Structure formats: structure tokens, C-alpha cells
Image (tube, rainbow, N blue to C red):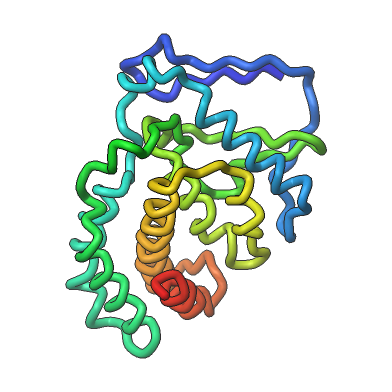
Length: 228
């Protein structure tokens, strides 16, 4: 198998190429992942994060939908969405928005947070399993990011919990995160859980529901649990 992907226009030198024998690949199964599959998933993510040399990565544009963009989006969504919710969903939204105002995730990250090349999409459907190795597809939104944000995007994506939950503790234990990264990881998980609360509300209201009927309520509880 030859995988060749260029993920931005301004840095053609940063193309990543890997060569492998052809194999049959499948999306990671729609059931609980085995320990072997979780380890393979983490290995693929680690490899991707280190795929672009640091001197090249500095010239790579920031990926879309980074933390600052998501904060701005939540601020735009809240005034119109808040009057439409009640009960636990309203409680979770209020708690999330209040928390968000206190953490300043729209500001540049701490200097100790290493930059990585991120795929830009945490959907497990983009991780293909060939029986021994996980391979990653869909780099449309890839770019420069940081590891904490990229890991949080995987753990908090609706595909990682709505039907067959990813073992988050097992997955995250495969990464040697620093103290600074650990704090940012928790903040990014809360931010993305809040984003998904809004996205699931939009999904529930557009007449073409793609997620289970109770997804909004479950997401509100997930957000409350993360906020502690």
C-alpha cells in the first residue's frame, strides 16, 4: 500500500509518504475495541503526530476548528440555543458556558505544550484496521495543532461513546503526556464535550437525526461529569 497525502497548499515539502504491502482494511469495528486495537489506534496517532519534522511543522497552517475558533463559535451559538433547552441540558449548557468564560482557551497555549501534526477529525470511522495496524484517512482538516487538543478530539467525538464507548483511560494511558499537557487535555475534553452538546442539539432539530434519540441527554450528562 502506498499512502501519499499533502494536507496543506503552502508547504508541499511536508508531504508524508509511507509504503506498505497491500492489505485489506476495515473501519475500526462498531463494537468495543480490544486492547490490541486500542494500542494500535494509539500507535497510529503517535506516528501521525510525529510525522512532520518540527522545523517544517512551524510553517504549517493551524488546523481548522482549533480551540479559539470553537470558543468563538460557542459564544455565537449560545444566545439562540439557550432559550430552547431546559432541565439537565440547560444545566449542562449553563455550567459549560460559565466554565468556558473562566479558562481563556481562546488565548495562545502555554509554551510547554508541544505542537504536533493533527488529522483534524477524531471520528473513529477515519481509523482503518487491517488486522494488525490502524491506518488513518481523511486529512481534509489537518494541520498544526497540539497533542492535548488532538487526543481530546478523539475521546470526545460522538463516535467514541454514543454506541460502543472507547476505553478512554486505556487509550490515553498510551501517551506520555506532560503535566502541562494533562491540564490542557482536561480543558480540551470539556470544551469539545460542550461543542458536541450544541452539535447534537442542532442534529436533533434539523429533521434528519443521525444520532440516537437520547444522545443530547447523554451528552449533557457526559459534560457535567467532565466538569465535575
